[in-house]
Length: 157
Image (cartoon, rainbow, N blue to C red; front, top):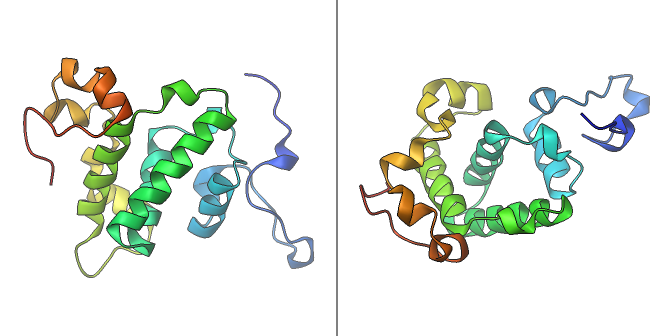
């Protein structure tokens, strides 16, 4: 793993609070996590499937569906570009996951804690879940990468 300057990542600390600042995303509050994601301070090697789901959950809780989706698309594109991997952005995958998380996050009363949400919806943490909805050929197509394609196996919620 390359050396990472841990002083530049994660939430900004408040030295006067006496509260230590951690560089582990799981320990950040939702607001700290969202801010670190949007300001591109999370290293690529610390941003995996669980972190994608967390961002989607945060946006789903705080914004109307279309605005949450727009923020997610913009954020993932910016993150990929910032880490030199703009070519890895996949529009259909981003939208499909956002729809799945949005659907899971909508019931009332809303879950206020990401870990409780994760425990209630463990299927969302299977990175292969989209295979239930999409054939491999459809999801790996250039059309799916650059535009939204509806699933060909089962309808998304």
